[in-house]
Image (cartoon, rainbow, N blue to C red; front, side):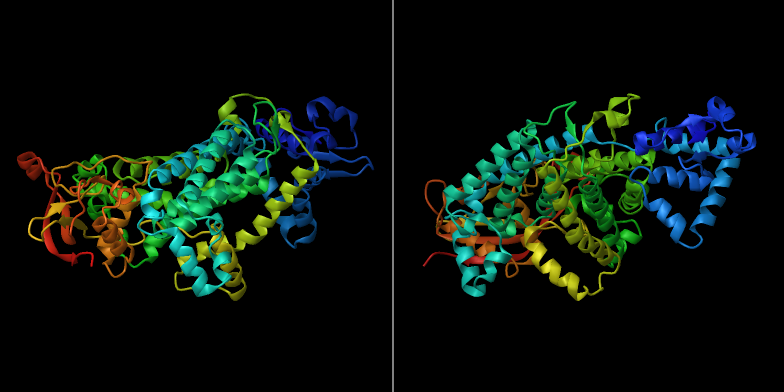
Length: 601
């Protein structure tokens, strides 16, 4: 391949092609070797690249590029050139245009790619990403571990040892396939603690870079089992997002006993694509469903008039953010929609647009985390953004990335590659349709995809997302009270959800207080829709330590109450004037009864 060595644009792209073709093609500048080929007019070297093959044939321009790439592993461009009508003509027209405007093309290349246009590698990002997923898994396991007895333990609110037999009695063996959890073998408190403990040990190994594939498999199996056992308490979007991310990470992880710098095994392009597509799906669906939900507050940009004070667990900054001027709130909503709907397409763009996408998505996640306690959701999204940053950015070196690759072709690496292909074949059509349903919510699933999704869905490896689809515009809150005589009532205080109007909103993320979160849904849905609430009241009447441990204050620590009731209040943030005058962060008014007085027989 002979190119114009004085052309900055040519030199940049020749470096990329050299990386892709390796030793199969020799690249030389026309200034150096042109005299050796008198059969090619000198003007040809100035206008286009020339490819000379061993059989004496000469190719120029776009065809020369495609044939040289075909000497490596990029055979599909040449196939399009030769077999798709019109593709060859369009390619040559495009090539001639660029050839005549090389200075402009060079500036655009620098603008979009920077100084290095070679195929990006992600070895540093892979190590950071896998360790980040290990940390997030660890947070999730530890956060659940301290609550699991009270939530789904033997004396918890929704005991898993009662849930699974009930499902089996109703659905037979189908229940086991629909609820894939190790708890079918043992659902005792000890088994739940063992699953949390195994998960934590595996996360420590993953963060240390030891046996990453095995550690990820253990994390996924343990957390999936706990998610099924957790029932409504583990039905949040970040739970399924963690499972989907952790599952795909298995195929990105190197098949090594220990991850180490300088001993990197080649990255699975399919696994990297699937994780980037997950980030695209998460952001794109979350944005589009806002506009297709029918909620006008997204179209007129007034969503933040309600969001800060109606979200489940606001932070202290949310109170201050609620006081922003109206124009800034509308700008913030517009920014959110742009980042969620338009920016995800930059994930597939050249380096600098990819980095811009990462920066904007991370900025949005930080803004969300500052104003609301969304557990480890923001951390997962930021971890996925790491995979948009290639090694050129991390290393700031001019070495050829291929020099860092150890191409392992043993049986297990091939098996991992086949497994990644299988995951792509199974999940990609489902994910494409899930994105389509965000645009067309009324669209019916094609029968083959619906049947496939029926088998895949229980494993949480292909999920739909849609955060804040419809903005909540009121904030009902449940106040639970107990009494020994039915006359004097004492309030059960929760650790994080709003209660005392003088208590400031708190910080609990990345920990998730799952009972506090479910109380928010219970207030919105009503007691009949939240059947677990009756079990919660029963445990309070029994003064069950595992459940009262989930609360901030148990006014009946020494003796169980005789009666339990729940009242419903409507909460709002105070204004700046009200806060200065009273010190209160919330104002409220009673709107009715949630649970009438109940007692044990």
